[in-house]
Image (cartoon, rainbow, N blue to C red; front, side, top):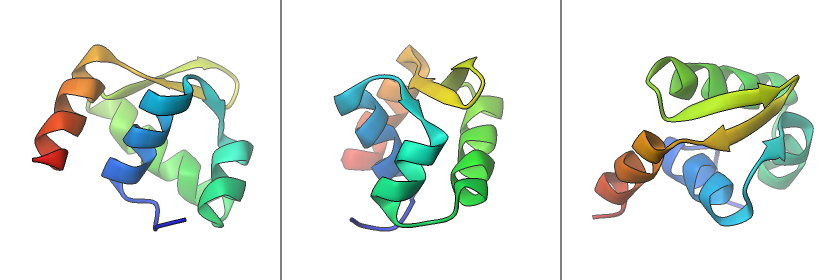
Length: 71
C-alpha cells in the first residue's frame, strides 16, 4: 500500500470505519509508532478521534479535509 500520508490514512478510515493502529500499521507496512504519531497529529487538527485505546475514527472535519486533498 502507499505510504502513510494524511490522505491515505484518512481515506482508509473513511472507507473502513474505526480501525486499530496495529491494523493500520500492518496495512501501511509501517511501525505502529508511525501510525500513532500521524493519528496524534490528525487528532490535534480535529480530523480523527480516538474512540478507545488505539482505535481511531475519521471525523466530519476529517472527511471535509480529505475532499480537499483529493481535489
